[in-house]
Image (cartoon, rainbow over all chains, first blue to last red; front, side):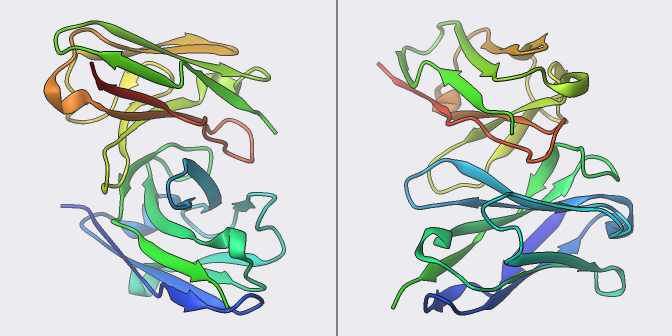
Length: 121
Length: 108
C-alpha cells in the first residue's frame, strides 16, 4: 500500500524558513517522480514543484522559484522541500504526491494527507 | 503559462443525473497531458483521469474523460451520492503544471 506522510509544517514568521518532509513507502521510491502541491485555506489546488525519479530534473511554479528547493533522498525514501523567504501568501496545506511515471511531466496518483504551513507574525 | 478555465463554477444536481464538466486551456496541451482530480472536504485529492481519457486504477467506469488540444471534458454518466465533490483539471504537458480553479458538484 502506497503511503505518503508529510511532516514539518507549522507556524513561521514572514521571511522565515521551513523544511517539509514526505516519507514514502509501499512503492519503489527511486522509480517515480514526486511533486508538492499546495492549497490555501478555502482555495483551489496550486502545483508547487516536481522532481524526477533520479532528482536530475526539477521544476517550480513562478510563485516559489528562487525561494523553494525540492530534493529527494533515495536512501531514506524521503522527499523534501526547503522553503525560504516565506510570505503570508505561502500559507497553505502542502501535499506530497507521487507521479505515475519517472519524469516530471506526469500526473500524480497518490497523495499524502497534507501538512499545514502558516506564515504569520 | 497555460491557464485552465473550468466551467461551470458550481453545478447543483441530483443523484442519477449525467454530468459533463469542461476544462479549457489557453493554449494547446502537449500530448493530451491532462488529468482530472476529485476532492472531497477535508480530504486529499484523488486522481480520476490521466492522459485526457485513461481512468486511474480503481476508478469506476461511470467516470470518463475526453478531449484534446485546448478542450477537455470529464463526464460522470450517473451521479452517485459519493460523487458530490470538487473536480479539478490539471495540465502537465508544460511547466508550470497548472490546475484549473475547480468545479463544485453539489446536491440539488
